[in-house]
Image 1 (cartoon, rainbow, N blue to C red):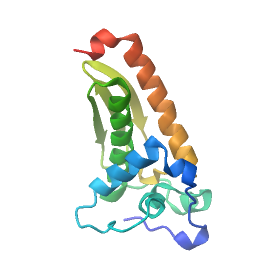
Image 2: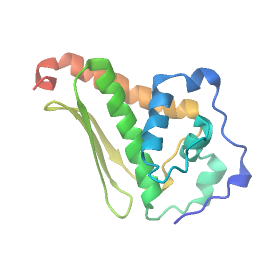
Image 3: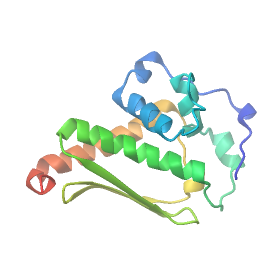
Image 4: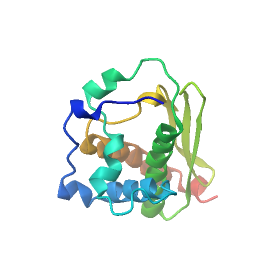
Amino acid sequence: MITIDTNTAPAPVLTPELAETDFIKEMNRQTRALDSYGTYDGWPTDRVLAPYILTKEQRRQIPVVGDPDDVTISRVKAFHNAIAALIEKECGLMAVPMIHISHEGFGRALITVGKLVVLDRTLRDVHRFGFESFSKMKDEADKHLAVALEIVGKYSEVAGL
């Protein structure tokens, strides 16, 4: 398991405006769903989502070559599950995320709606998965969400199958 010295950077700041967005709420839900032992009970959203934020200094501490641990893989899945939930909320059709990651940290993330692939993303260096800030994490998700919804709108007949 890779350990990161969290003392090298200040704790990530989640603004109240950002905390009220659908994406951050869904990320909180998805991450808490992974907590089978109740560790996150009583924790504020920014503390629950803090492991998704890696500063440049923290990223430098992670080796370039490495195998992802189960916790990191769970974070990747939670991120894509949140995007799928928002796609489903927006278009009213079930969105199904499928993630395959090899033991070396390479793989693919797909989200399908009906018979339509709305997100196809190659995953590399999963052991270094993270974002510089909460707003950058949200921006990345919004980018994927916009493209996915555009594809659903364009090929709605296939999405409905």
